[in-house]
Amino acid sequence: MTDSSKLSTPEGKSAELPMITGTHGPAVADVRGLNKATGIFTYDPGFASTASCKSAITFIDGDEGVLLYRGYPIEQLAENSNYLECCYLLMNGELPTPAQSEEFNKTIKHHTMVHENIRDFINGFRYDAHPMAMLVGTIGALSSFYHDSLDINDPHHREISAHRLIAKVPTIASYCYNRSRGLPFMYPDNTLSYVENFTRLMFAVPAEEFVPNPVAVKAIELIMILHADHEQNASTSTVRLAGSSGANPFASIAAGVASLWGPAHGGANEAVMNMLDAIHDSGETIERTIARAKDKDDPFRLMGFGHRVYKNFDPRAKIIQKMCHELLDELGGDQPLFALARELEEQTLADDYFKERRLYPNVDFYSGIILRALGLPMNMFTVMFAMSRTVGWISHWMEMHADPENRIGRPRQLYVGAAKRDYPA
Ligand code: SDX
Image 1: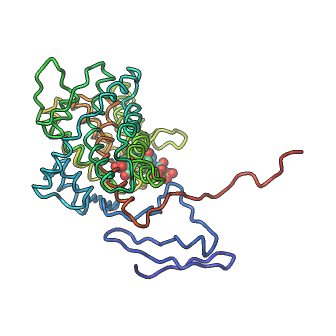
Image 2 (image 1 turned 30 degrees about the vertical axis):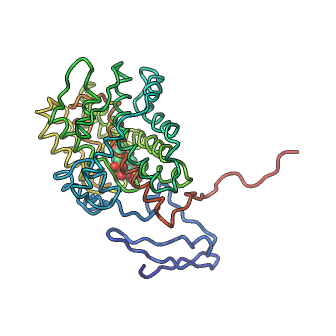
Image 3 (image 1 turned 90 degrees about the vertical axis):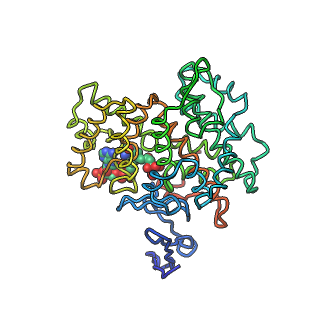
């Protein structure tokens, strides 16, 4: 903890606000004593200037376009790691040794199946239910199956719940997909890798032998590494706030899935493709799309652009754009749509409105092109994001419960409603 700054109020009260510095990034002014010393609150809708917690999991430098998982640059992990190794890293803080990796992978594989009643549960949804609606409901319902691991104060319960969620979400995601297509639910095949198994759950049918497509496996592995965690984004903050009340891990993660669904957050990958299709199919020009995004009277925003933290290129967008170059031919993807996205990016980045506001492509701008090339329908795009982010959510949930400073989250407000008044006699 370094020096402090002082805040004084018009009423003559003052508070010393100690400055705290971390490993990387801006210092924070510790305002925990502010209300007691001065009676005032801070005001920060959207928390753009507020650090909600201390965390050692992920670091983002928005100006430099840097993303680190436990200190390792995302570019190096994307190049050299795999999703389960990143899961171990995010949860435990260090890369696993070969023995730890083997043990962790075996543990996760041991939990890939779900209770048979989950199949009935998912079949209870309408055939045309959005897969995200099924995912939110099913993950929340998992707490009704695991009464043996809901004690959030027991580190072993927290760990087995984490393993169950990482292992079962791909199985559940595939069931949501198959339910919406009227296809049979496949059982996991633990002779396959985590991502190979997911492609089999998604695309195999009982009537035919299935061999995972190595190009698709490589693309999904990379997409999942890139989406695994991202500091205190809206859905992760939702998981922390839900979990701070003592809610069980399944309910807390279900809250994160619900928050991710919004088009301003994880739902943007689906919204980007709708936007690109509208330009490609309806003849809406790029110029018109950009003009609408700039028009304050039009609620439309350029989906896949802008970010609360990145005021430079989202490093994940750069990696996915490179993936589009490399994999679209092999995947038989939509080159014209990729060319359109590149043209839209080029014209947008040249426009003063976006330059002045430092709005760049984010992770969602190109991911939909790859996901569609993999044969996924658009309503599964955010499910893919949720499947990947499950490890980030659970890592923050575990970090919060292990933090001695952890207490229930309960923000205050600036009341601007009616003054106190009496009920008419
Ligand atoms: C994700 O937080 C995370 O880390 C999220 C995420 C993760 O991994 O968890 O990275 C994943 O959610 C990525 C973001 C996906 N969302 C979209 O692509 C939707 C489109 N983007 C916008 O909705 C917006 O940029 C946000 C929500 C991402 C960020 O919103 P902010 O930080 O609240 O930005 P803002 O509303 O304060 O915008 C500042 C200015 C405003 O203009 P002025 O009022 O200053 O004139 O920029 C404008 C905004 O109108 N603006 C946009 C814009 N984004 C911001 N204008 C047009 N198109 C856009 N996309």
